[in-house]
Image 1 (spheres, helix red, strand yellow):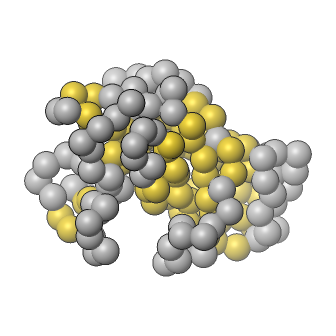
Image 2: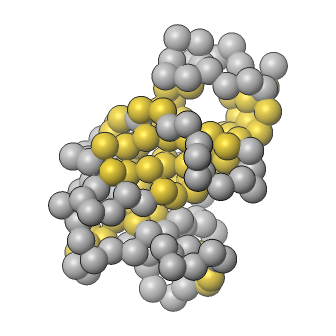
Length: 152
């Protein structure tokens, strides 16, 4: 059970965060309490996948509770895919899973959702904002993680 945390999304190239009491992005010197990003350190912040392919879309999730790293892998995780620039409010959520109990040396945990034919969901060709939702108690952070492009 996590208490007393802030929610945030992290940009791997900068110290960006968004908290539950702000509707805009702010540069931050302090690390975010909740964050999600593409797990490919130094890699692209966007995925590209053929509509015919069945692959996991992954997000590296980190959490800090009471000033210490928190393992969220006992929490339920879900993914939403919206038009870029669109809120996750009212989005359809798809069941995700935890790929690992800890990502090697990252201090984070990899959440994943299987996308494509026979996966958790199949998306039409287009661009999507990937959102991660972690159902903790009492918090339920909804965090933008990366961009996804589905090609023909």
